[in-house]
Length: 484
Image (cartoon, rainbow, N blue to C red; front, top):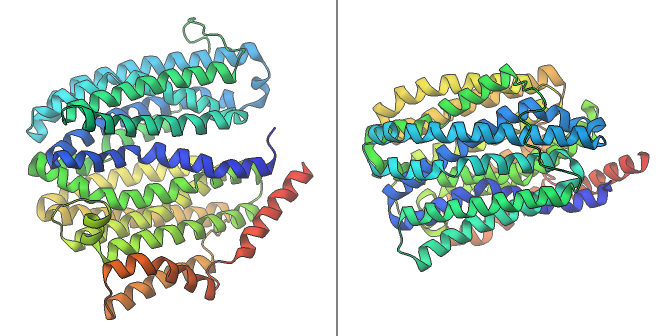
């Protein structure tokens, strides 16, 4: 069994793997921008459908079998463990094939909706990858739940992400640059990743034997998880389809470009610190300890997210053009609202993770379903009237509802007060720099070079962050380990 020191040492590698795993397709969107905004729209929709339908299948499979993998009694019973893993892989393959067919038959209606026949061909192409992706994700989740195989998960996430990104580079460098070339190489990367995942499974569990006896353990899919997954599948990113239907594929590509930078803030901040939530779930049993730990996490998240968000709030156009190399015309207010929305979603994410850690995951899912239900009418009302600005305004309203509901549930149901005085200081310092720049505007290059140092320096001076916090945190973890 891992020691706490080894566990903490793996955090940085886990975070790197998780960040690469989650944002690889966002980074790919930046690469595809070289081919024009229409191709960005085609790429995004094709990848989105592939990943969302795969995630839908994985959620259903996990809700049926993960309870067995979490039960430590079964990890020592090789025969039962083999039965659970085989049933899990068989169900994931069946659902993967069903979802691949669903995507294939949805391709033409989606192409007609966005009025571009190219969408149909690429969506059908990416449907081929769905069964491989579903099974791969399920293998990695199996290894993740059997906690002693975390290194295999980290290794796979890093290798898979590098494969996907490098294959896109190969497609653009050595072949005729086209969206079909890039997507074809993405399928190749997914198949290689699938082979690597199976290899890791056999290497990590030498006693595992593939058995084709169909579903040796009965399926028990939670109705709550099924409903939650269905709502997420149907209503998540509904704004993308509304923009595509109203304004066409070229404008849809520009809209996706607007979403890239704010979504990067959310993805990086939440995934970098995702491992710490897992730590809270693994080692801490009472609300006081969860409170202490969650405060450290949210403070760290806010520091990183505030730095990134301020760049977009103060220099929206410059950040897109000079840092992300996205040359699209924008309304600064639209990007600012989107940036603020995703920043608020980070706090909502933290509240949701606390609900999960404190065994209130059903409440978190119910809120997600409710948010999905109110998102659809907001987008349908605001986007036709106000275009991209209407979408950003809808995002802001949705994010506010999300954070208010989840924070309210955390404080009333769990007694975990995760927003500390230091967290409020970090927010106020960020607001201070925003106001100062409005009064005394500075050059973008000066801001890029000096602002991060000034921000951190002010945090230290006002005790927004202290080195003693991290020393105390390590001491608590070591004390817990010695007690065990």
